[in-house]
Length: 408
Image 1 (cartoon, rainbow, N blue to C red):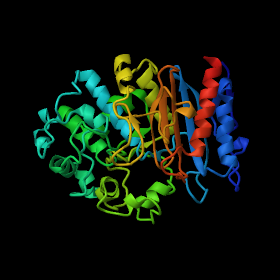
Image 2 (image 1 turned 30 degrees about the vertical axis):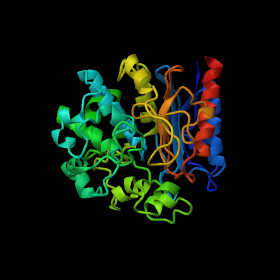
Image 3 (image 1 turned 90 degrees about the vertical axis):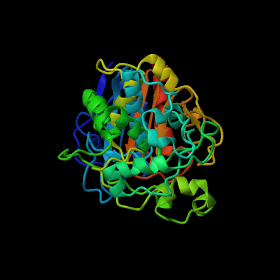
Image 4 (image 1 turned 90 degrees about the horizontal axis):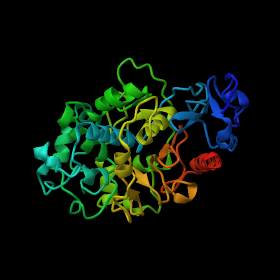
């Protein structure tokens, strides 16, 4: 296959948002077979739907699309770069999931052994039978921290969050239903990793996944990293979290609802600090890093495969489905990853055999084991929709599947 090289960046797009040929920086490329993805990327800019963004696709263990363009800041003065990092929001959970499953694979952990075996305090208040599999499939019922909302100080210390989780009560009988563990998911797994290894999820990810794979991805940015961070522009969902009028979303208006308690009610409004580990929402990564990570979950990347084929099949097997008790919409979960079919991860976009995670801020990542395909997309323009697939993402994902299906 040949690789089309794009011109060195002069500007990063026009003032009106249209993407010019010069908007793609040196070393950005697209394999000829995936040229349709580049066109879709260009169309998103031409439509004025992007300020800055990057998209990367891996196929059969190697990158076939690696594009970035636009601006990393709202004033449009700082061009997006190859290694620009965006805040991941919910797809942070993919980093934690990969870390936990890597540990489970390495140490032969039993996903059905009660959490309390390694974390005795967690057994309180009816949680003795909760297993890692229940957490991974959003079935544990431990979804609220409104009794001790997450603060920057608590995140920095880690221990107060673990203590709050141990003191939490399940919102339903564990294992009998599913509900999105929006704020608790990453912290539950991080404490399990720490109990096993002495490392938090962020440190384990950095040492055992990001380091060997060379990923520009972090759960807690290390001192002196010198990272180039995109300024993330507020999405509709984030505006609601910050107190905007929820309109018809009554559950986000009423503090007594489970939807409110598991999301807004479980978080303080402290300003974010990229150096502090927030393993549920605060991860940072480039699009290339997301695609490379997911590629290593379904095959070898430069000789590294994070989990074996049997674990990948288990990851991608449905563990939960139907109405979500927190988000109140149908969702399907594997082990820590979304599966088709739902409005945010729809089968009709080509995702029928895929697993991944969507972020309310527009970040999207997935892998398709059958096609040996992995995808990462990081924009800084927040999504204007909530509860459905952003049109920018659909355009890119559909182009990816059309391209790969032509060469399979």
